[in-house]
Length: 294
Image (cartoon, rainbow, N blue to C red; front, side, top):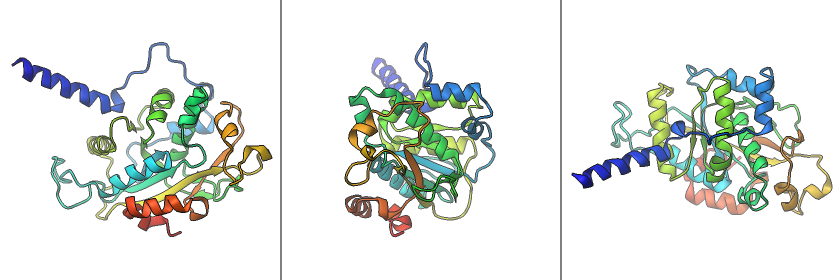
């Protein structure tokens, strides 16, 4: 009986460890200034993106954000997942993708990853701010068409649920995102990949089922890709010889500077290394088939 009791305790703790919605903020937590400023000005664009979120609108996408390789892996698993019965939700394959009819939108953060550099430099505030900015960008229905587009003239899907694939983004920025979202309505589900991508896929499926967030469209899931690139017009020493943000500039950027140092644009092979494209072709063929050829 004692062993059985311990087993159930273990299961309960495991569930809590992967359930982002149940996570508690540290006592005395103070959000980054970007979040505090938006909460003080509820007419700001960022705050309005969150407060205007409509949980009854199921047409939005599943937004997957993070380091390019982490993002690629998780996105492919969302595309091919078939571990649930789509009729009754039980844990059994039914031959139909779990996210049938959904739009899987991946944000490959080439400009700002890898995030370990911010930790190495002790620049936690910028990583926290970056996490907030990228969740807001996933909600936005506009982005730049190129690094030179300041008017954000490209129309993209807005997110109805957000997946943070980076454990570092989750560790340092998740609480800032939650403070903002709770202040502006608290209805946007944000899932952090802390243990495995499989647990994130499962959690997303259950949240969408509980909240009736599926489109119920009879179609295979589709995919769209976006990526971040260095903004144009920065000082010359902000770039390395390949046109990426230089190491020192990238990891020592000041939070709350108000200077746009990167842009979100539609996925384009022009801004992706051949090594990454080749890796995606092998490791994520479903994703590759949707947009790498562009």
